[in-house]
Length: 315
Image (cartoon, rainbow, N blue to C red):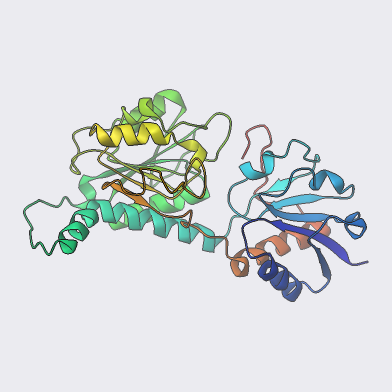
């Protein structure tokens, strides 16, 4: 019997996702609306799905997130008790690392300053440029994405440290954990990268108190923030206050408390803020669908699922 899969990917090109699934797995029937035909759906690929649609599927076996995050799934409080799987794919991981490296290098090499000078036809080189190994990048969230970015930043020359809620060990990167460990990492950090999942524990974690703990007298003239994780991790009011009082020298923000970012947000025009439209690591169906289909095939054969979400932890 043909297996049915629900596709509910708000904000993505659903027609493209459907066409690629049907091309790669012609034995699967793709359902995009909850109708009588969807009653026997066994798998679901979702992104910001409508509430209650998953609970309407009595034979559902597995829920797959169409991206690295899963907080959008947990917004539905009627979720059925089935496994939830995060997508971990080389394409998504590489794209995130590219973004982090791009922003870190831009801050290191004074990109904003030179763009302003170019706009004003100013030729001026009067400020010393630190080497990468003089700058410490601290990464909050040493999962698959964070560790890949850490190793690549280290290859460029940055000194890299990382923090996670629970202890992790890595032969290449010094890691910290817990409340005390976070303080120790922040105190030596020149560029703070946030790649944490959004949970009840991490919501609003990037606030005035956290930013005040960053290294104050580093080679960049002040600490820098890069958030490519989730907008709910940050207090934008606190970030703006830190930028305006000089305790934060610059910020690169790809995610925001409300998206799209409101047109009247002062972040758009702040001279020391880089705004990108949640574009750090786009979910490319050509790269991600094969991983999902491979998991489905393995599960059908009695195999185990990879990258399972811990419901209690929220990621």
